[in-house]
Length: 156
Image (tube, rainbow, N blue to C red; front, top):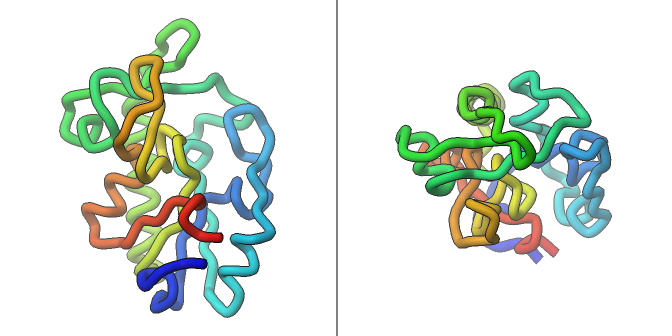
């Protein structure tokens, strides 16, 4: 199932789409009964960094350009809409700030996030048109803040 960070955490941030909230860019969700079972007995704090930053649902899909979420936080890469290239970097940084603030406010020691998301990807993201190793912007910010970040694909 989970692993040490989730086993020992009393409070867990969770990508809201994994909890059944229709907040993905396409207005759908990634509800996971297995994840809900793994979270029994935990205080769960739903987060959607993109919706929280005001990008709305549905919204145009975004990919990272020039680097992963760590590079976006460091000012070396951007978050841009796939079609048209509208720059959403500041909204992604704001969503990351909100995720870190939620972790601190609720005392969350761990987060379970949606893999491959430009915000929440933990091991892989879509960057420059390809799936690559790296973290999303919120996942990178949470890890930098000391939160144990787990992919939904690691929690079964």
